[in-house]
Figure: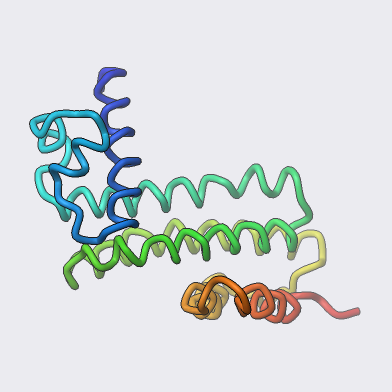
Length: 178
């Protein structure tokens, strides 16, 4: 059983690392420890390498994003829940570019393999809700949806952001037609 102070330290380290790596992909472990308000020993006990820390930040973000699906489905119709969820995913993926710069190619592969299943499962749950209420086509596939939406986080954010229009086109393609 992990002590509550150890859990709190880990959460603070992950939050500090997320911010630090997003601002500067070259942020050092010492900078992360300072930002988190913990000593180097605490940081290295939790994350023995910089890459382990970056991977944990990624995994924490995937867990957070996939965990929003039940609440979204409870509050919104499936297509609107899918729109909100995908917008959140796009925002997170855009923030992760700094994190991505901090990873080796092997770590990129590891995180892709770790996150693919939970993300596809979340999308499947959203699509299945829409299939059940008749608003989403029966042939809609979570893997296809994920591949299509990959273009959204590569679209330049800011004025003229094409992602919302592109997402609307993707969602329109998912709709059932009477």
